[in-house]
Amino acid sequence: MVIVQKLDNHECEIMRRLTDKQARVPTAELSPGLYRVIATAPCGTLQTKIGEFLVGSKPREVAGTVPPLGTHGDGDVVTVGPKSWKHLQVVRPDGTSAVGADVHVRDPEATLF
Image (cartoon, rainbow, N blue to C red; front, side, top):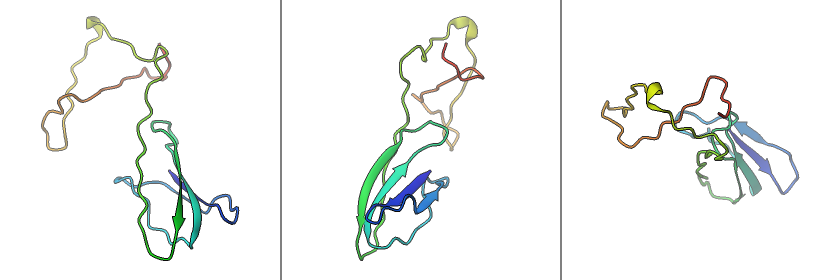
């Protein structure tokens, strides 16, 4: 989710949009001024990032990245022993093996072990 605030006239929020499958939001016409953008994932899988930008008279595209939220290391990473091994194959869209892919698993309640 991307939230845009206009800072120079103290408006709380002028736009709130969900990203599409390409992680983009629809184009928005913004008047010249200073803005804050907040990018967040409501389900908590990505870090929240906040940035500010200045809109002038020429059209521009604003882009940014939002990294995944890492584990906090407080018992949330558990090595599963041989009795619990399951067969899992991770593939790319073209069907080839995704060698080296990280796989993260949680129990149904998403609690820490």
